[in-house]
Length: 307
Image 1 (cartoon, rainbow, N blue to C red):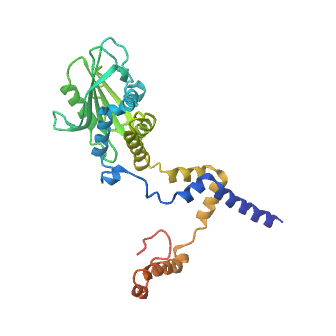
Image 2: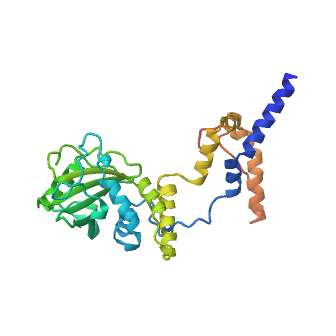
Image 3: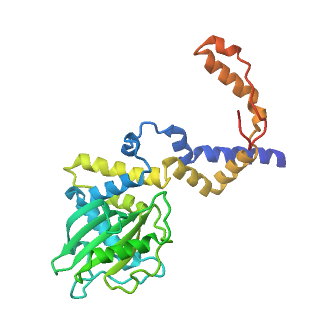
């Protein structure tokens, strides 16, 4: 009787898995080859300069003003200061906290040279009605690491390049998940004109999805959605398949079933003959003479190269 109940329980576990919404979506989605990704089409996916250029364009293009305002407020907020750095508010000449709505964009440039012959990825300059000027300097790190003292060097050069007392400098360290820099020491820590902030491409993706261009700009709305999706999937790895797989593992019954399948997966040698036969059938469709080739698979165990 217990054995029958065990069989029924097993059947119900597999039925629960295949009924799960995430399982059905994984099954029905296919490979997603029809998804449009402008970064991949242009061959610039995961190239840091390309992402910096896109952000610069978004900040100066008037149709994305709502996004630019929301993101600027995010990086101006004292809460965006990295650990160990004072989270002072960015203020006007009267000591009042500045918000993005108080600022007018004067220029945005990517790959701006510094007096030290270094280049910072993006520099945007803003002015306020109260006479305050704000320089937003963004260092974008996606894959490349930081050189020793890199952020300290940038800070010193920016303070030299913009020496006026009415100019505030906001250095933004931008990474996929908003990590803290390791090349920032004490440079500029005692200078009231300098503020250091952390930002993430994940936040940019979310803001782009929330603050779309107006409905009369449908092409720009579609572009914003594509960029947001690319950042989420291509940069952050949050693909629909990964989200659905995580949902399955968050369900205890589905997780137990999937782990049971994984634990019982066949060895390569167990499937060798079936794989060789499928390859032979595929080759026969191209050229029947290929089916005479002697096919061999090495090794017959998992965890080693197949040649």
